[in-house]
Image 1 (cartoon, rainbow, N blue to C red):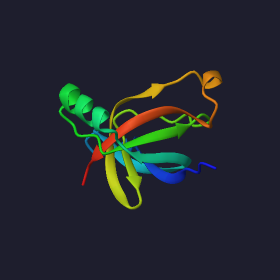
Image 2 (spheres, rainbow, N blue to C red):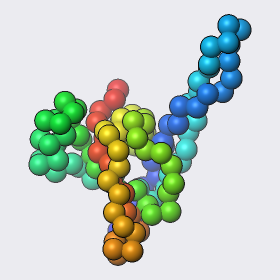
Image 3 (cartoon, rainbow, N blue to C red):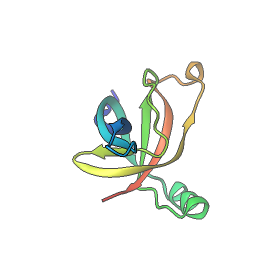
Image 4 (cartoon, rainbow, N blue to C red):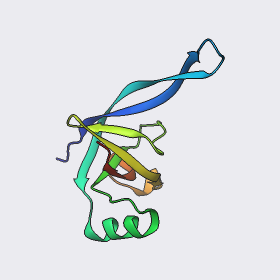
Length: 110
C-alpha cells in the first residue's frame, strides 16, 4: 500500500498593518497529510532548469481532497525548507485511480 507523509505548507498571510499603514505578514503553518514525496526524475530536473532556471529536487503528489494554494509557496519536508516551482499539474480526479491528482516540483530553499 502506498502511504504519503505529512508536510508543512507555509501560507504567507496578511495579519494586519503597522503604524504607517503598511501591511504586516505572518507565515501560517498548514499540515497537509498523505503527500507523496519522491526524488524528481532526471528529465523533470532538466526541463525545469531549462524553463525556469530552478533545479527540482523532489516531486510532491498532492491528495485529491486538498484545496490549498501551492503556487510559489514554501514547504517543510522532514524539517527542511523547499520552495515550489510554478503551478501544480492537475489531473482529472475521475481518471486517476489513486488518492493523488496534483503534482508539483520543489527546489532547495535553505
